[in-house]
Each structure stands twice: as C-alpha cells, then as structure tokens.
Length: 321
Image 1 (cartoon, rainbow, N blue to C red):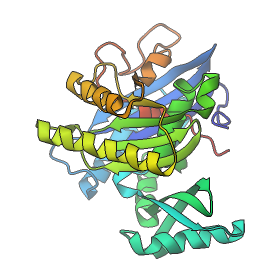
Image 2: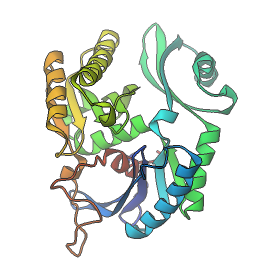
Image 3: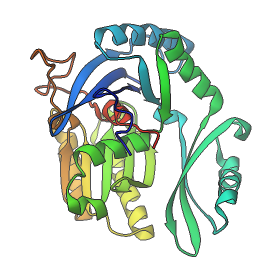
C-alpha cells in the first residue's frame, strides 16, 4: 500500500537530494486527490562539489533551514540515495526455494559491485519467471547510507526510510498517471532527465521491470551529438527490454511543463520511432498547489516552473507496506 503512512492527512516529507538541488515536499490528502502541505528547495552553490565533505556540511545547514521555510507538519522524512550511488543490474538465476534467493542474488552481483560486497545493502525484485527466475537488483554501500542518514540526524529530522529512485518514479506514475483501469496491465517506459543523469524505468503499473541510469543529463546536452547519444541510449534500453520482455505500450517523460522544447521534441521522436504514444507527465499538474489560506505553497508554482518534482513527490508517497 502506497498511502499507509498518511496520518492526520499528512505524509512524511519527501526529500529529493540531487546533484544540483535539494527539494523537500510534503503531501496531504484532499478531496479526490492530494494537496501540498509544504515545500522548499535550495540549489547547491557552484563552488561546492556534490558528494564532498563540504557538500555534506552545506546539505545539513540547507535541510535544517528548508525544514523551517517549508512549513512542514512533523519531522519524519523519506529520502533516497543519490542515483549515482545505487548499483543496478538485471540477473537470471535458477529457480530455488525463496529462503535461498537472497544468498544467490548477492553471490551473482558481488563481483560487479563498485564497493566492498561486505558493506552492500541489497534490494531485489522478481521481474519474470521462465525456465529461470529473473530479478532486478539494486544495491548501495552501507557506509554511504550511514553518511546520508547522518545529514538528517544532524539537521534535526527523522529518516523514516531510505527508498530507491526507480521505486519513487513508479510511485509517482501509479498515483498520477496510471489510475485508469487499463493502466493496470500496460507496460510503460518512464523517463526523467536530471542535471547530470537520465533515469529510465519500465514498469507494469506498480511492478518494476527495468531500471537504468544513463550518465547524460541536461548539463551534458551541449550539442546535437550529445543529444543524439542520449536518445540512442534510451532507444537501446527500450529495444533491449522488448527483446526480453515484450512490447512497451506507452512512454511518459516525467518533467515540468516548462521543460526545454528541443528536449521534448527529441523524446517525442524517440517514441515515434518505437511506435508508442508519449506524453509529458508533470506531477504538479495533478496536485493542488495552494495552501488552505490561498497562498502559493513555497516555491511550487505551475506557471514557468522548470524544476522536476517527481522524485520528492514519489518519496512522499512511500509506504513500508
């Protein structure tokens, strides 16, 4: 259940800590949907390197201030590890008893991990069961998780959970763009182009089937060649999935409605080449963005908004169940 953590009509604060921005957003239930209780955002200073010790000190101070500015209810947050700190792999293993799966999954991915397997935190999801069982495996380094948790502790907040970015994208899709009856069985490709990375997810409603991080983002899209390389990478993801799993039926570009026109046209062309319908998925368009007193909620304004709030919204929809 996605909404089981909603108490007194307020969810935990979703914190999307990217390489360029820290975005915090809290959802509440409204008649027929959701409302934003609080929101705040801070951009990383250009002279601070993302992931550095200086960045960690800045993040602590920024989150502490954002928690005040956002006018949130409570101190509980749900966050995700930075996308670049999450290892993702698709594997197949022989069918076996459930109690043996975890050990087999870890053994299969351990040699590929970019950190010590002894400190790995591993999450896996079954994506298919033919002659062998298929899994998508997501792992991160416990040492980095501890550093991440320390930021919130020192900022005076309580980290209720650390989620994984592919699941946050799926939760946003299910809650706002996958609510029709036929969406339950549709295979959908979700794209989110960030500052330095592009996130690719393929799912069937709430079931995660594929995820990949492409090392090209808006900051790298300086010329037509880089744009073409990104589109080629996204097309390769789609074709790989279709050869393994079957047809993609829909593509959603999770972004703001004010995103770059050329970028949107490139995604539309990719969808046309793959012969699937495409749309822009702006989570803000599906949420009431004003507070009870009629005032705009923090930095959240639909008109002219260039920030992508998919991650923070998805994390705000997290549930342990």
